Image 1 (cartoon, rainbow, N blue to C red):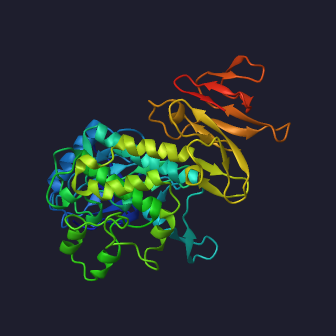
Image 2: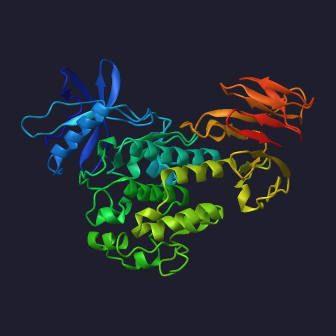
Image 3: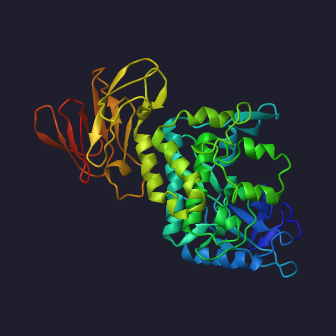
Length: 447
């Protein structure tokens, strides 16, 4: 294609022209530009025709996605397209911009990004880390949900990479990018993506589908939580001259999970894989077991892979097990407590915390100032994993008196210290006491 110049006008398929005002980023097959149209800024993804061998397939798929519409507002979905350049066949599509509050997935994995210092103009390294365990696990839940939404529409993710997700490190909100590579099951756009994100059957020539997405999801989650690769261990790095063919072998026919309980030939190495070694110890057994299953039995047997619902339920549980102590330490209660425990102890300072039991699960939720009850925990049918329905707060007038404040649109029925049940609506609160019972509607809870 002819290189687009800053200041150049690009015709849209519906007529009219947008002005190119900057470059957002470059990939192997395309460049994303900042454009301005009627005082509004958009992003334009424009394809390099010299590097894309299946341009017609991609263009047809984008048109289909525009017609179908996005699964929800968490996707940076194609909105409309440019006119096709008559001389080169080049084209692109327009989408919304990533808000500044969202970070690149790769920067989160690296733990930093390079920015320009406003005062000096120098390029400096800035840390990129989740503000809390809550935010990180919420991000995981939202990534899982994005895969569920795609596959519910009968489509799969064929161009997965580090650039496919943007994450708000304060809230865990997620935006999905590369939506031009989301295509119906049974089709293959033959997108040139990194081998490490492909399911083994796709590497060996198969078509992407729901099962291959389950595998790719496990890869993304592992890289986010453990900041490493599930198959990059001693055996893999000893193959120092990895060709694309050799890399494909390590990720298809010859895979060995770094924590395979029956094969220690590809273990993570101290000094090389320190992130994985560190973070693997921080998670409860049921999370580690899920990854072991995904990267051992699930590698070559798609029926053994965890479903999107299974991943979702695991991480909803994990988020509810976070205990953020007043001493400043946060951890998962299932790392130190027994299932029958109803009082949890901070391993750092030994402070004790009460917990709440819910009728829709066997594990309990620790109660501490700031702990949240999410909508998805009291309404199992919802697709909303960000909305907080309730929160444990301290009484402003009586220090040390704890209560739960409702933010929910639904009316709750709560057993108060007088022994009677009272209706609680948004903005109202009630004390936490030993005889507390809450009827949320579809779920009940008690102290």
